Amino acid sequence: MDGDRLKTAAGFVAAVALLGVIIWYIGFDKVVGALLRGDPQLVALTIPVAVVWLSAWGLSLYTVLRTLGAPIRPHSAVFVFTAAVFSNNITPFGQAGGEPVSAMFISSASDSEYETGLAAIASVDTLHFIPSLAVATVGLGYAAVTAAEFTQDLVFAMVVAAALAAVVPTVGYLVWRYRERCKRVVVDRLGPVIQFLGRVVPVASSPSRDVIEKRVDGFFSSVGHVASSRRALVTAMSLSALGWVCLSASLWLSLAALGHVIPFLSILFVVPIGSIAGVTPFPGGLGGIEAAFVTLLLPLGVPAEVATAAVLVHRGATYWLPTAFGGGAAFVLSTQARRARQ
Image (cartoon, rainbow, N blue to C red; front, side, top):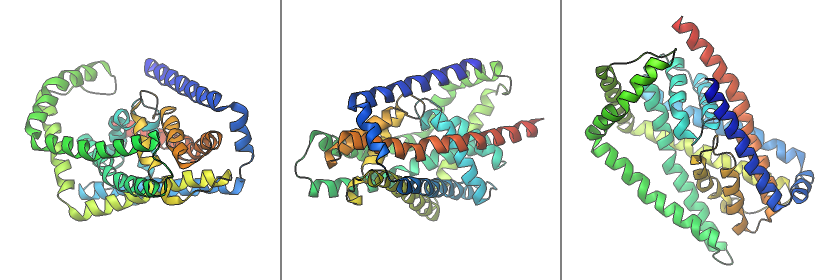
């Protein structure tokens, strides 16, 4: 555990160093000057907008868990999702690295099997894709129509959006189409790793191959159950879309607070496309996401120092505050799970 904490701390140090390089490159005095000129009231508005985002995505998790028959209340689902955000934000590769820990929180809070929790958080993360693509498409379309010229950054964002629209659904279809083969791969390749971790981690048990197969089957069964519920899909994706709009609103408010107001529709592609940088090996994509956001704001005519300062304000409300509150939620859930085991 000490080694994991050391790696996490090292990751944060590296990410903050990257942020420092970005600010240094833009100009420390310029960025600080832009921040000091900000309107405190508009900056403060980013916090309730971030709360609405967290609540919307937490209720999306509640919708999926209710479909899976997991007993949990709406406010508890939001609380658990906040803890999941914390695990994503302190784990390298963002959601990909934080999902196993998030599944543990979910299964504990909803009194369900671990694979049900994993299926729930995996389903929620997957369902975020379609609304994010829709929101990004609206933003890119508006930016393309109103842009004076097609800059390299704007063209790159369009290419990324088109690639995601083609690749992600294809991969998802292939995994589901050949799920039996995927199950065998998981059991054959990851089974020994899971058993090894069960032997060396004190709080875990070493499952047999039959147990692993049963859990993998349960995971795919749960995902299929969610996919077959049209009402759950529509509700979860609608809440996801609300969350994406709130995240974009937070960034828009951050720019407005610094005296740079742009059409709201033009900014809609920045957060969904820029969030792809969350797969970087830094905790929660810290550093990489900020760089991506700044890069995508430049084609919209935002000065570099204003873009950098606005991104720092936005990430304060949507990264640092949720990480702080999510850490408290994770502590409470971990304590409850430890007492339940005892």
